[in-house]
Image (cartoon, rainbow, N blue to C red; front, side, top):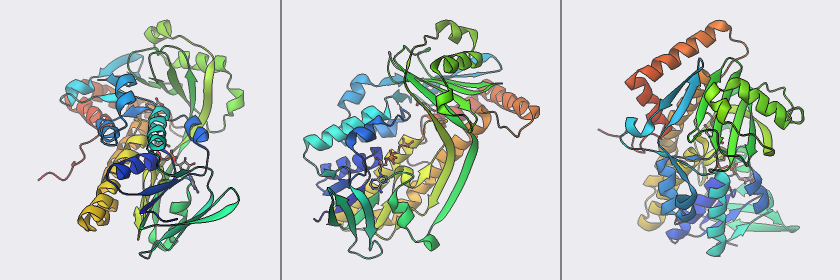
Length: 396
Ligand code: APR
Ligand code: PHB
């Protein structure tokens, strides 16, 4: 089999890239290790920046998102027992975010791909990438017990943090930067109305909490927990009880609890690979970088990687120019590091770090108090949260 772009991974990065390429008449085959249902069962964040919304539209898959997504013009910060609203919309000249679950977005992309009859191979095992340092790369994999070969012009490594593409890059050509945080997030999804119209980020003496949502009837809550906690030990009751201890009176009065649909503990990590291009193989999304979830940048960064990569590939095929693909790594990394910094900083000021003494909590409260009472402080949070402009740092 032959294609122009072999895309490894059918998460949001791979599917979005596939859709954009198809719209431009560029052939791609997506190879995914898991089944489609398995991919959809993974619960991830669901806050879209405007650039991600625009990309879904550009890919022609924005219809349901616009119908069902919830526009948020702000969010609350709760610390020292007090609630403060960050009015993103007013602070950024009218920008908002959209709450739309990653599962829904992935489903829309999968459905569009299937409807257009675009080739996706699910349950492709033992995917291996070859000769990407030449102009004739290829991918091998096993499907239904048969070894297959896919020849291509380029390989797009959209295969997440545990994927094969980054692992196949020569060790001498790759630099990895990593910070692992000393706690995790325990998440609970429930069919209960959200406690508040917008998100609430909580810094409490008992640790971080987040009140998020997927729709008007489905909530997503998180608690900072020690990494040693076991998910089996967290009953739903224990979760709700601990959440209540981290919220204020107003939220406690409005909180509606119910059985969990899903409950899991996720570690927090900051991770970046440099570069994101190895000859004719590119890394995009979680394959190249991970952010801690504070601030919900993971999906949005994946989307902008894909945008830069798509622009480069389109330029290659339509204008016979390699300028775009040559700049991919540099352009994407500039944006990635800005979001990495924001996510790291937001994580630092919102969580209890086990090795820090009581003075750290005082510093955090003083910083949050400053930020919430300073127009420039508020704007700093707001402009990062809605997403920095794509041409940030490039203006004259
Ligand atoms: N062969 C084929 N497919 C693979 C392989 C492999 N060796 N390894 C991983 N995959 C698949 C995974 O099964 C997964 O479906 O690649 C896909 C990668 O998807 P994601 O992990 O969702 O990564 P990405 O598409 O970059 O999306 C980033 O996911 O983790 C969140 O916060 C992150 O929202 C962001 C988004
Ligand atoms: C989520 O809804 O899962 C979510 C929202 C905001 C975050 C992280 C996760 O910062």
